[in-house]
Amino acid sequence: MDLNKVMLIGRSTNNLEVKTIESTGTPVVNFTVATNRKYKNKDGNMMEDAEYHRCVAYGKGAEVLGKYLVKGKRVYVEGRLRTRKWQNSEGAEKFSTEIIVDSFIFLDTKGDSETFETESLENIDEEMPF
Image 1 (cartoon, rainbow, N blue to C red):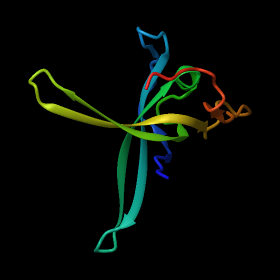
Image 2: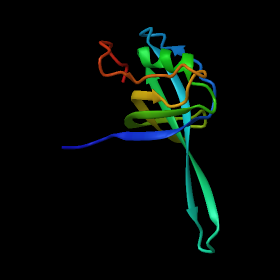
Image 3: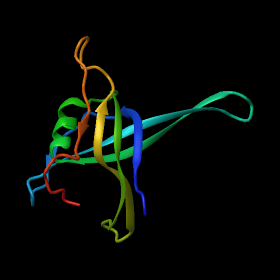
């Protein structure tokens, strides 16, 4: 059995804009989640690295993310990796690896007393365009 599963906790690096796939009418949102890693270098100094993960959500999940996930807010994202290949205008092959979001949890509160709950895409009866 093969496994393609990704789980991240990080912060959104931008405000999201939901778009629509013209051929199907399916909502889609592209966004980036930044994760940080702290470690000690060989001299014993604390260091921090950031990694940026491209994410894509479709359907109802795209709409919910687009409405509530804003720059700097923490989010748990679960999904699978997909690598796409294309040619740019000069004919060079380009690759992009992204996380296709299956479910997510908003980890920050919206306001002082309102919290977000899990949004799972597993129960949505919608054909995904991939």
